[in-house]
Amino acid sequence: MEKEEIYERLNNVFRDIFDDESIVVTAETTSNDIEDWDSLEHINLIVAVEQEFGIKFNMNEVTTMKNVGEMVDIIMSRMNK
Image (cartoon, rainbow, N blue to C red):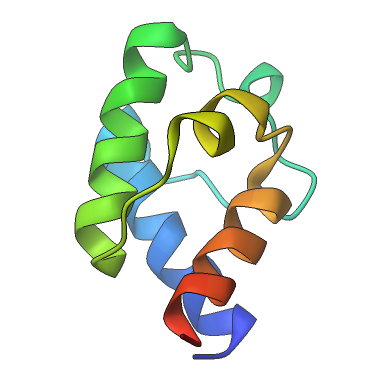
């Protein structure tokens, strides 16, 4: 799976979770960039991303991800196994 496809699918997940069709995530996107992205929505987002890609993040990954780019890197590593 190519990064572009992952970002497209993530855009859909983010738009659904945050109910905002204008969201376009980039590698640098963080919780500071999306108004409603708080700790509760972070959990909902992680679950939705896991379901979308059929993967499971471990707790260390969830707590140390700094931006969407790191999330994409983890997704790519799981999809290529």
